[in-house]
Image (cartoon, rainbow over the protein chains, first blue to last red):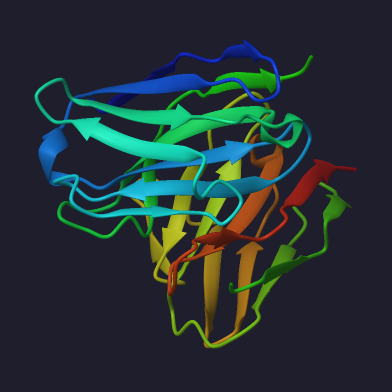
Length: 122
Length: 107
């Protein structure tokens, strides 16, 4: 069955960096777009970034553009989120999510990981 | 960005009640809308996509409709297992945007 396992969360000081990983299994990873979606404590869902199945196309929310970088390694079935210049408002649970259909454009999110908590605080 | 406005933000209903949530988009998004259910401490679960298409295994007491800018999500007979927060999400444009959520509780 499809599994998405996020890791790399933790506590970081403002201005520092963290890299999140999402290890995927149970499906043909290199045919699905992948996204990161975050949820601040007690708040709603916010889409963060999207990468196409082949890694050639990447899209970001304005709130993270220029600070976060999404990437993927299809040989390792893993998607990453490099987060630089972290701010307190980046504190959230970060979920990776798989597209509904293969070769899609990251529109509907059929599978989600359990999330990894990022806390930005001095 | 397309703004998604859900109402109500929370509701309390009795087991067996009919519950309806609405989602209004700030512009026409055709039928490019999904509904998710999120239980505490868990990732969201996709219930409905393309405004009214069911994911496999979704109970028949759930239904959804709408197109353009106005959408509804209905639970015909609320069950204890339905206690969760429900989100709509548009995928007509980037950035993908979610409604603020509707927390459903049992009275």
